[in-house]
Amino acid sequence: MGFRYIGAKTRLLNKIIDKISSLVGPGSHIVDLMSGTGSVSLSLKNAGYKVTANDIMTYSFHHCTVLLLLREYPSFKSAKNFIRTYYKKNTEYLFSETNYEIIINSLNNVTPLKGYFWREFSPAGKPTNGCKVRNYFSPDNASKIDAIRAAIRKLYLEGNITSLEHSLLLHDLILAANDYANIAGTYGHYLSKIVNRTKEPFQVSPSKLTFINNKIKHKVFQEYAEDLASKIKCDLCYIDPPYMKRQYAANYHLLETLAREDEPEAVGVSGLRPWRDQYSNFCTKTKIRDSFRKIFGSMKCDNFLISYSEDGLLTIEELDRLFSEFGTVNIEEIKYKRFKSNNTKLPSTLTEYLIFLKRFQRVLDAT
Image (cartoon, rainbow, N blue to C red; front, side, top):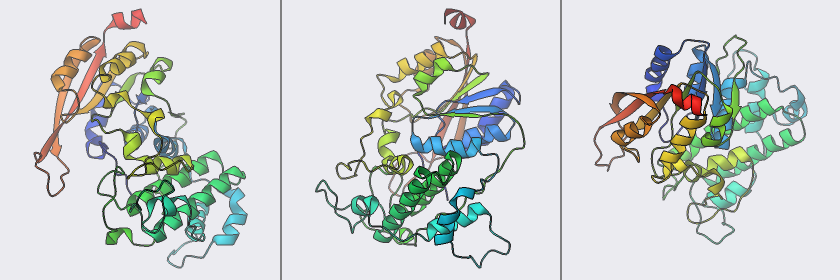
């Protein structure tokens, strides 16, 4: 299983954590203000920091809840009737399965259902708004997704799984959907034909999680970064904003639907859900500056570390001028290999900027 998100920082994690470690010591409170997949939040947690993660997307909320708030694999003790109905012993296990592995096994054995995903996002379906069929998932896999998401929702609504168990199962379902999706990159569109790798029978796999034995209490929020900033006091704020015009809420609409467990009207060729309630000003060149200013001007924090790409809406010179309104700025360049499709003419390397802003004391005095 894996994350397939624009701008994911998995390749830069060591650089980011090393930079943060040079600025504030372990035990400090770090805010990951736009946490996305939660990879930076998890690395900070593992490094001994107190972490507050936030993102406007619901799928990110579930990812971060799992990565930050779970202290052990949950017991799923109230799901016994569901397990009794669907569990089939796995002969591949050399040792006894955990309750977590058992409920994943049970979810994989639910009876396929020709529901919302089958109708709206498979070539065998018939979209309700009259659009042509969409090839996001093979028909068999779409019906399996429908059945599994229905089972998870029913377990939660009937009180047979806790909120943490609920987040864990949705986290696993979302990661599995990424593996079987018939897409080239984002969910902004699907491939014209169902490719072979997406025809494999849909299976959810248990996550391999690591648990840090400490008493630090982490927090997870789902708010706009600009709104949350004034409510937060921390030692350092890490910001990894969207840097292109493409809105995450539109590009990952199917994952958001899995996370919200709803069935919105699927609009247009791509089957978009209504997404304006998660619109990011950081994807708009005319609004991004005001959003940064609101964060820097309202958060009770001296230190800000911002990741930004050379492909971003603002140039590094523009960012430097903007951030210098609030304090002293230090910029570090990190070059790495660019992901390229076969027909792209973009350069083979990409520069990521790590920008450290040490805020002026007068900003704090004025807030």
